Length: 280
Ligand code: SF4
Image (cartoon, rainbow, N blue to C red; front, side, top):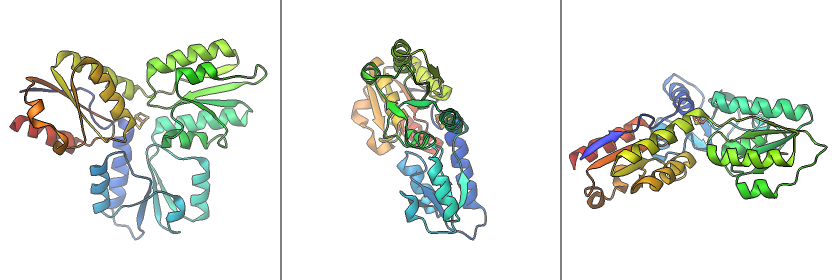
């Protein structure tokens, strides 16, 4: 079996930074319990590793007792969470990705100027929920080309548009073209993260060279699932979280196997799967 790994597989800059900051907190001497508001990343195995080290994951800030440390994950959170953390006297360890933080700033600044925010992304994704919280949860949130077509805009209103960092660039471009026809008073900010685009392009390129692809990442990780979709368009694709998910008999049929991984997949899981494939 000839195995080739995508040049852009695994942790992106923002996740690497966030996971490093969280790990440092857990390893340093600390007298306060450390909580994470929501799973640190969409990777069960990585979250378990951090929890073994003492991290407690809470789904809601109200579950977190006063006067402990609270980690804000790379997805970022709404302004109201920072306010509530202050009220509860929590020590905040903010690992929000700087690219997401920049979107918060754009949204807040334009909302304060009186503009209506158009947020292009998935309304259920934590990053989008957090961004919406910087304009008092008033953003118009659209995810699809059909939703852009159906959207009615007020010609008297000034709009500011931002995008979820993991939006598909092509879909985003089409949506922008549609919105431009509806209003000339929209200030567009392409806030899609370049690391997502680079990872997707590298995966597509590798898939075109190989007989099959293995995409490693959490089932709930949206960027991993997008990689799976891209690779499936090009060649047979195995979507797995760990080596246990691999259909060994099936993958043995292929000679050239490409590997990529989502932004929330740790190196140790990728390495483990590569070693396992080599051993087959
Ligand atoms: S994908 Fe981009 S925006 Fe999201 S955490 Fe990674 S570096 Fe930050």
